[in-house]
Length: 190
Ligand code: ITT
Image 1 (tube, protein in one colour):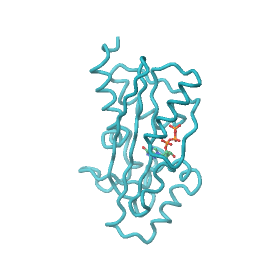
Image 2: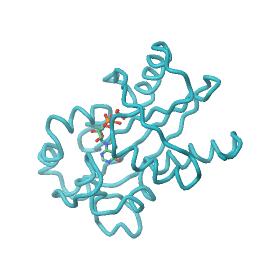
Image 3: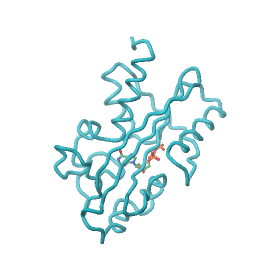
């Protein structure tokens, strides 16, 4: 359940090799603001179940949490991207020195299984806000986020291909945990 094609491409790249089909449902749900990623997903699941959607389904909420901005944009990431954009975040960080530019991407995945039971999976990728935009792959805040990882070499997510990003990313970690859960709890896909 997501309107974001970039998220779907990343999930497909991890799930399809394991034999799972990823079907995007764009119907959406009201995203509570001023709440945690977990609360946004829980309220979304409540809404979808009340509106008659039959499980199993998967919800995902992600955000970029910038330490020097006290966690902003965080749960407001979508609104921030649509309003001030990457350039606006860089502007807010203009006078912030290199060592104080730490940030983290977080993903919260909520899986409602066929029996209606909820399972949560989280992924965090620590890194920092770049001094300037770089790269053209990915989506969202990828051009301004440099993951802390050996081999990343100071490149932003938008300077990596999808496989490299998902190996390091918040979403990659959460989706791998979810796939491990499926592999453990369900019979293998035919
Ligand atoms: P759905 O809620 O329909 O899934 P969305 O694009 O609104 O799609 P989120 O609320 O989870 O997704 O994401 C908040 C914002 O953070 C959104 O603008 C994304 O583009 C951005 N974002 C999320 N994951 C990202 C990633 O891996 N790389 C860069 N930006 C990301």
